[in-house]
Length: 117
Length: 112
Image 1 (cartoon, chains in turn purple, cyan):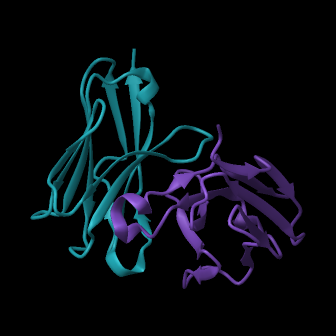
Image 2 (cartoon, chains in turn green, cyan; image 1 turned 120 degrees about the vertical axis):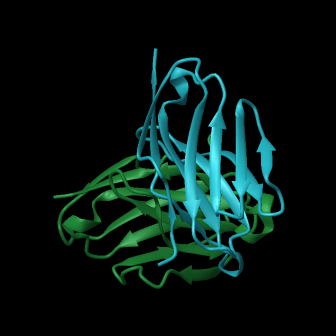
Image 3 (cartoon, one colour; image 1 turned 60 degrees about the horizontal axis):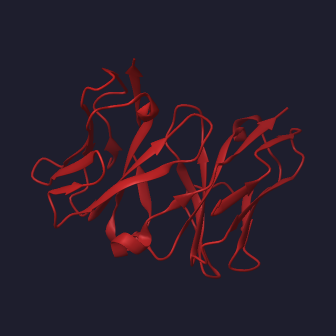
């Protein structure tokens, strides 16, 4: 039944060691998003893909990269994790852009909690 | 700067009472708003949305009110249940960018 799946649910990495988080969706949605959420804070958008078109937020550090090899999968790569990158990473999908109302509704996965040692 | 914020960071209500969660936004160009519920350890879950050409929308036990004059959004939960305990976020869309901007969140605690 899960429509947006994130693996792993918990990830522990070492300072500076590259890590990849994955997201898959069974909704066949055009748009996939990655958010960072720190404790007691709102989700913060890092970037999104509209189909294969990558859209980076202006304040997203270069340390964060993303890949979308096909419609169903999207990856978040953190090249050199720092202690400040410890957070919950949320993947979301939508059928279209938010401007279109209903088809822009975002559906979130359960998140991956990243710990940096 | 422009932002979406909440008046109350925490709200405690008695089971069975109605809950009202408020949200202020500052960008008059925002044309679409969503309320999300986030339970501990889970991703945000869509509750209800409203477009700027509406001032009220009802769902199952929830109602969203939009007052564009004062740039205010509220979520009303009828007959609040323990399962409603969560953090609630409002989010706005600012038009052409097509991205959601989330507010800070309100934690709702329901007392049995």
